[in-house]
Image (cartoon, rainbow, N blue to C red; front, side, top):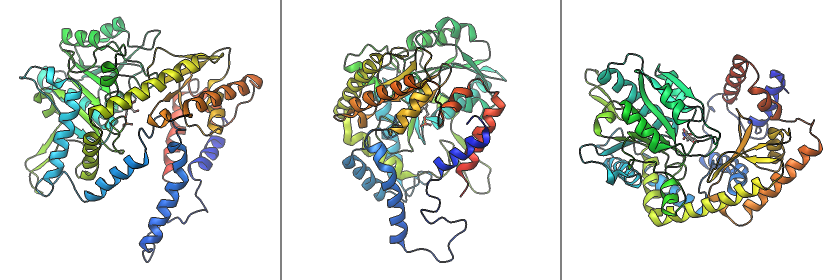
Length: 468
Ligand SMILES: Cc1ncc(COP(=O)(O)O)c(C=O)c1O
């Protein structure tokens, strides 16, 4: 299976299960198909794929998913499906929705505690990655124009999301990755050592994707402020949970604009904001930094052009249904959802810790990473759990697996089923430690194979997605 050819063949089977089962189109059909038939095909495909996420077998992925909530979002989407925020003259409702999404998110994240000279402002983007890219581009251009830094750097713990690598590559910045401490939190001293005259921004997570732990944000923000650099808190994953965890008395440090040195944040409405996929919020302390995100063209024959994010035309319907999610759930709804998720997270964390042979990494709240002890292969455990229907996330450096608890897991019986399946999967590995199947050897080898080879395999995977 470590042979790249064999790897691709197994991916082909996994990625293209509908070959021969459903009609496929290499070119436009000469005559269009009847709408009922087309919609029926789409609905059948959705039906085939629904049960795993609906029944709580997925890590993250679908964060709410109750049929009533989904139907409500779909109703709102349908009402606004033609809207495009690029044309606020035609759809001023889109500007209303987006201004209020930004304001509600900013207020939740401490905007009422900042000084009036530098209010918290922001924009709605298409997702966490875009929010991060936008912020990093803003810091790059701010560093070049205001601080005279020709080659700005991003300083981030190794655990900060891959979107920061993407930003550095896209915007020709240097990303300085810094090791974390034994609890997988940013190492303050090492971060301080990494800051140079070229540093544009220091990055931290609340919490990090891999291990679900929150970096020491007050200390890092103080470091950033002391050195005169930006400080971005990536709360894509936790922006809509951590404020309520604080309210519920969980021991989490200040992490948002209440912390003086924090200059920007990303928070995903399409995760624990319970909107449909396709929205996130990026926030800045002060209007000046946001100006470096915006794009305007004044001399184009096509007219005066202005867009706040990377896209031109955008789906206004997604902003409408994001707004609808926020105002229909409200503070009490988010608080209650966070309570259920955090309680289930604690049960799952303690349940995993109680399984001999597994070890929980760090001190997480609801995104729980675990490694295997006794020389057992944690990726084979993930593979075996996968055969029982579960879709978990494989991590590396160190080898581990995580589950991000969502509302799907808070329903009766789901957490117990997970712990039972995990226990029996581990028992299988213990009984046959030399059996390596499916993706387990690939994950196991990825950290030791040459980067070029792994990059080639990932590129081939992306090629495969677009094969009919
Ligand atoms: C901490 C963190 N940042 C950024 C992202 C990127 O978000 P998206 O997948 O919406 O682009 C994620 C996604 O899981 C995340 O967990």
